[in-house]
Image (cartoon, rainbow, N blue to C red; front, top):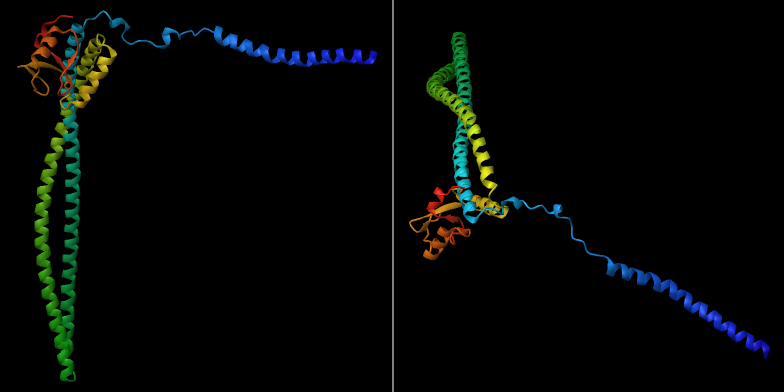
Length: 302
């Protein structure tokens, strides 16, 4: 009986150790993790990671921005005209250079053809000499023939050589006429080539002068454009550039003239015209998407 009483409590102690110990190991880290997840604050990222481009532009009114957009449009239109003038001259220079190459090739080809014709004439002249020698030879052999068959054979050879001489003389006349015609073409082409070379020299000089002048003017205009863009916020600049790229004439900001849009010439509703004159918000044409301004904006001082 004593042995049974001693064994039962020991079994209970072992069971308590087995059950309590793993509970401590598993529960403690889970509670800690949950506590950390709950307590951990969500801190916002520092403001300098998201800089705003136009933080310093919030003091400008919509009227100021519209005036700056109009000024920017005028500057960019002037730059476009400068680039168009500069852009046409390089194309003209390139066309003249291509034409000169073509004319030079033509002169070279005709000159080679003339040389070939002259070689052909020399060959025909040599052929005539050879035929005359053969005729003289066959004529001498006729005095020593023994029968009529040999005589007739020599006579046919002499006739053949005479025909060869006539054909060679005809070819020489044709070749000579071709040489005369080709020389006339070469002369006219060479004259045209000389004129084009002079034109090319003038165009290159003009292009160099325009580039020297327009580079300074364009640089000044780009500085003014950058100053005008300082007043305009980023989204308006993006919209302005997008409209300019889609428009054929590069106009993104236009005036309302005669109750119509200055870009597409469609009618602007009276209520919309009133809002444009108030200059309290940026209004675009419902037909072409250009930014609309009233004519009085020219007299506004920033």
